[in-house]
Length: 218
Image (tube, rainbow, N blue to C red):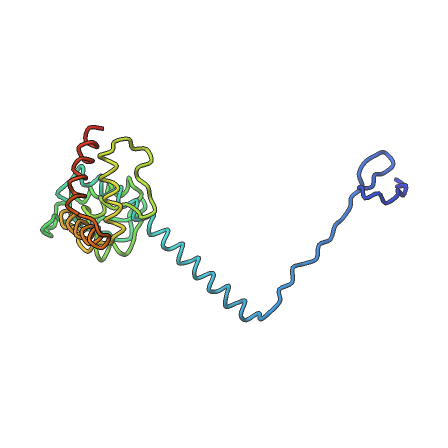
């Protein structure tokens, strides 16, 4: 087929029966300039940073699954205080090798099976932290990520308040895992805050009692 030349009007040319003819466009390749060794070093740093971020995200995901399992364990088997894992589970995840009570006494096989079922339901993968240190069931049942808002679907003000307090205590990274000690520690910090900012902590406590009663009635 013969193509009749057309004037250069800025439009794509057509052939004799009106079809557009193929037009190829070329683009200049991107040129890297500068010190290539420095570029390689920066790319290596970037790779390490992304790797660290991925590891932290994976650990946070594991902790969230452990928290789900710990809540289930506390609900059905409150005697279980600590659970130790090893890498391989025939159905995937991790295998419970020991379940202990609050006094560090090993519990029977049926308790290990109960803990194993909870971990499997929550799809908990193996993590070396739980082989050497075990899972503190009470602590992990209370665990909430710092960047997680647990109140999105909650209307109960009393429940919201308890959750906000838990998020605050987790963010404060208090030393103790005992709830009573953690609350006392937070109150002590609030006393310091009130004094530093020039208002009465006792007045705030009195006002908080009124807020608490209102929340209870909501």
